[in-house]
Length: 53
Image (cartoon, rainbow, N blue to C red; front, side):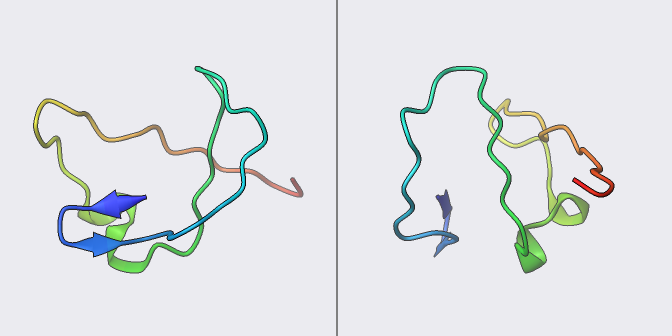
């Protein structure tokens, strides 16, 4: 996964990803929702809270 100027994840194994699958990226630091913007017509992703997940 990439930000314009940085790398969040270099290599990750995801078994047969399909459209509509949910990908959770934890501990993103400054790349979190609070610093997100609607950039290049891509809206911010949905924020989901999971309790005792």
